[in-house]
Image (cartoon, rainbow, N blue to C red):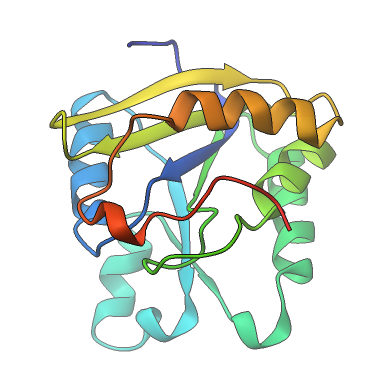
Length: 167
């Protein structure tokens, strides 16, 4: 499935079950000509990795203080730039979770940008961008579409994939 990537969007990366998701996504998106920024925990940005993390579009997030400050900064960045693709793994971890974090949805809503659904499907050996969804404000309705898109997509460790739902 191939879609035209918007200049501004929140790019969802799922499922996220291994550290290998990141380099595969970087390579896959690069091959498609897509440059994006992404979020990772602040501890990954220490010396010597920090330089390379930023070089490849990384944005440090200190989770000890919650995501509110980051969300505000992301919304401001969408307003300030003509091109900004922000990739977020809504599971927030490589381990099985009971729910997805809704920050990506809130950022897209407040920034008035679409949500683009990206994936690394290990079972089918595919990397890609699929559905583009403009958030309606009706989370339940929108998440029905998100869930339908990701059904059948398999992470490297499917047993670590949680159900696609909000808290």
